[in-house]
Length: 104
Image 1 (spheres, rainbow, N blue to C red):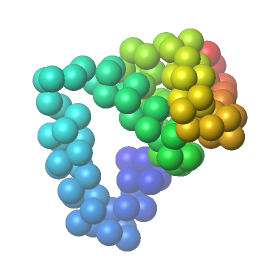
Image 2: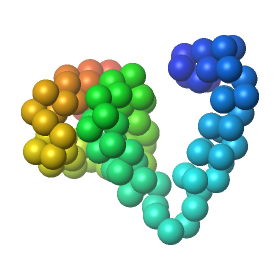
Image 3: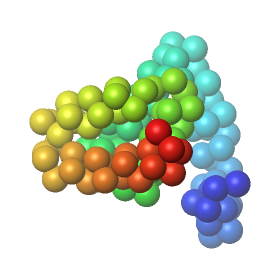
């Protein structure tokens, strides 16, 4: 279990339950969008909202869902023009950490 998920379970078990059941158990499983597409949308939103902690995990999930390192770079570029260069620069740093951890 991830550290964030463990902390959520410890501090707010109901929030952890709802996130697991509704967000990851229902929304992420809907057939109208692929998990790959959902990952790209989620990464873009987390970049725009400057949600660094969640971004780190979702970049990893995006890679697991078939989004390439190059595509993540393009998502960062595209989002930076709508949300601002500072959020793009932050996302580059986070992505680099994830890529380095995975050796890619």
